[in-house]
Length: 478
Image (cartoon, rainbow, N blue to C red; front, top):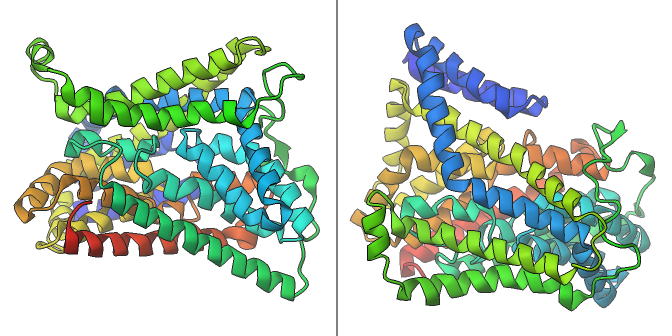
């Protein structure tokens, strides 16, 4: 009883202090130790940190650090090369200012689906979105929702092949790949895209009818954290290439297409034809089936980074600075998520967790898809992170869900897709770091923009998860 109470209390405290802006790097271990102490096991508090917490943290780093590192580096290269801006300007020119909302959504979707970090996209696209919305006289308060719809939803969790870390986390647990349940992923992604777009369009029309317009805003605070000081280090106001160099749309798209295409070729053509028996003999503890999907992403991102550098080789002003910044960009996200995984491991070691685990697993014994979706989105909401929620849930319950799926005759690919899409539901509650950062970039508050942002990143995505669970239960994985 006390152990279960300790888990609930520390989860609530984690949400509260994360919302207040305290770093998860210090919050997670403190809350983990507090949970042990509140459970009455004082002697285990230090070993719980040094062995359980740090063991889970290091295990997560071992599996996923290359993807975080390469993803951040690729995003920085896209931004500093001018490729991200070239894609954005081309889409805007083709659609025009009258399609401002659709333009912002599509630009963000193209970049994030190609592997660019959502934070890099937000910083790079906001200035363009601001000008578009002002020209079309659409309320500025809708900009965060438009950026979030294109960056935080269907390209992150649903579309097959997306190199987002959320889509990679289930791979070693379910022995799947990033293209898991592709048709269902496309269906879910379409629901998110069309539903979110239509919602924002209706909000814009309603505002127009009321004569609201773009609104009066102090644009000097744009891009500030907390609305006071500018985060000049993060905002890519200028590229690290020659000022006279203009990247064409086709050249800019090559690395993005390469990430998805090479990943598909490796997954479906090259790796299936390779005999890994020798490798298995050399590394007997290696789970090859659970590693191939990760290897595909790593190779694809490495090749895309190299190609991106070579395409702009004559124009880089300071390539070293770009590479270093890209490397540094990966540090905080990977350690934040790994710390949350460490916290989850400590929680899972407490006796009170057995009650919570059994309650979740027995929620729908005949259909583990529902239980899985509830677990993923709940933990994502608590941590304020889809990757954090996924990692905690799968590290503690992954083996159970795989066993339940096999017993129920459910394809692990379907479990993979539902897990990722569900984690993209409650992950954008008000205390989410991604939400707080996006609103800061746009110079807006929760009161001004959160309702519409929640509609397109929580309600509609969760609706799409329900549809996918129904279709998957009726027709299986496809």
